[in-house]
Image (cartoon, rainbow, N blue to C red):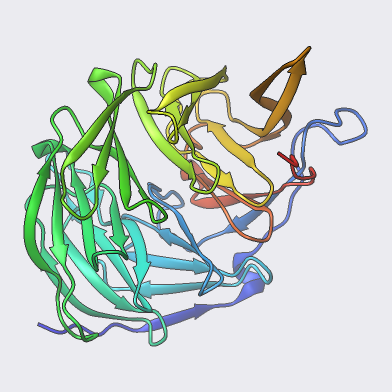
Length: 356
């Protein structure tokens, strides 16, 4: 069935607030000021999850879970648009769950709804849900694989990635076409477009899996050094894969050298999502336990004739307790979720690129 829902444009002045928190730059040059961007929520809180920046739309895409809305934020004006219709439902614990992950492709958006166990196709121009199809189990991440025209949905409860083919035409629902087994996973998912690969974690095994997007076969198992591997970020050009460890560590793997560990850094605790700015070669890591985000740069350091690639801390920003999800845009902005207050924390990356 084709469903159409109203596109809501929300006034900037109502939804945007500005405050500066933490130490000033004069007192602490490494601590970066922040701005708060409000989002509409009936309860005042939002259970954020997988935020994405879409460079073609030039919008930050926020699946706002129990609100039933996909929210699009303009980085320049802070204007918030909401696409409604992702009806949340109660899970076994009595918690409302709705839209939680988003991806883009073919001038469309694709979103998963945990409560409805569905995968939806969205027209961002009209702000309508075009069609939806069922998924096999509770969905986590959804990613568009441009090389094959497929949608991959991670379903950790079943230890698999469910694969959907995407027929031509904007009004056609995705079609289930198979599964990729990932025992003790999959956790997180990034697509390496340059090399036709995908990466996902097996948290209980300390492994990051390398999957061929054409054959759907797992071709490599890389040790990631994590007790509990969580989020992933990728620098396709330089071959850097960053793995966040829940216990408070970031590990940098070399995709051009069999996943060899390049370096690692410890920071905070209860880590989950990470984000990477490839133009600056800066990595953003929020700790939901310490309410601090750290900015690392990829750099080269010389010790005599030996040159090492390192992660060097540039600065920090005060966020909020429970703020564990993050995404960066191509305006050198960093967006961090604040679930307890149902808002976003915006941080401007004021540091220069690494020049690596």
